[in-house]
Image (tube, rainbow, N blue to C red):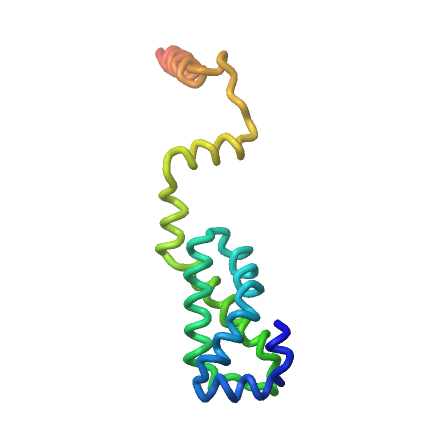
Amino acid sequence: MSELLAIAPDRLVTMLQTKSREAFSLLYDSYNEALFGIICRMVDNRAAAEELLQDSFVKIWKNIHLYDAGKGTLFTWMLNIARNAAIDKLRSRSYQDSLKNQPLTENVNTITANSVVNPQQNDIGLKKQVGKQFFIFFFKSCQP
């Protein structure tokens, strides 16, 4: 971060716009942890967050010419790119399906951890017995 502070933000942007690999390396080294932390908090999946971080920096590299200092700081602009990438990922069908298709052990642990009601051994088969009694009562009351 100290190297980045030695370069004025407008100079860094100019270097990035000329596709300076040194400037991009400096930018990545300075901001990857901050952007990764934000993405991780949104996605809650390390592998997906790493992929999104990489995609975000590629997008930053390709679209640095769109950055306008009059609209905000470079970090804010980059943050919005990373945040939008994470939101797109969360909304994607493939990500939603991956949440539904967890391995069995994860589903069992999730159900157990989130369970509010703990069934008792005496409750096993109770619905079935109650259902039988209801039908017997119903049919008896319907006969002339």
